[in-house]
Image 1 (cartoon, rainbow, N blue to C red):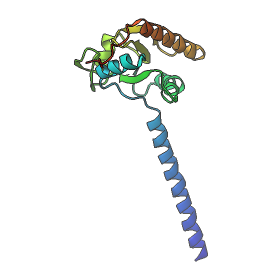
Image 2 (image 1 turned 30 degrees about the vertical axis):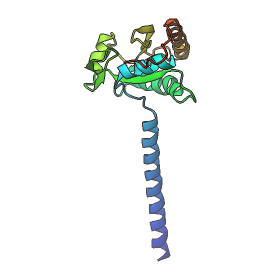
Image 3 (image 1 turned 135 degrees about the vertical axis):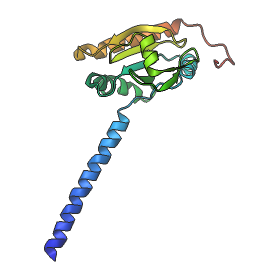
Image 4 (image 1 turned 180 degrees about the horizontal axis):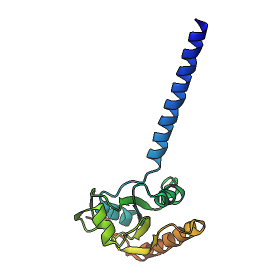
Length: 174
């Protein structure tokens, strides 16, 4: 009887460990995603009001370089106490809909194509008007310098935002 009891306890322990690992993996995957682009028109109004650049990762499902850029460089920006960017993700081949900066409905794939993102990853930088605010970062071939490229592009985007006229009191955007 004791042997059966011990076997059950060990089996329960193994099952618990497997379930815990699965749950941890699911939580880690959920935490490793960026908010998908849904309404860039509304994001632009927020960017204008809060004086923030809009950064969009054009990604491809299963792309290891996209995952590296997302986890190592973009998620830390998002997890900062007071994120200094509006960060979104567009899937290169997705038919998911989004509202573009001009208020028109489009798809992730069409948005990426319109902004000449034909490979992944591409990080795009926009001002509060939906205009390009810095040179896009295309690919992730030099990981040692990627952080420096990202910091420079963010600094360039912030300079563009500083040049925008201030929002008049009482105007929230469209």
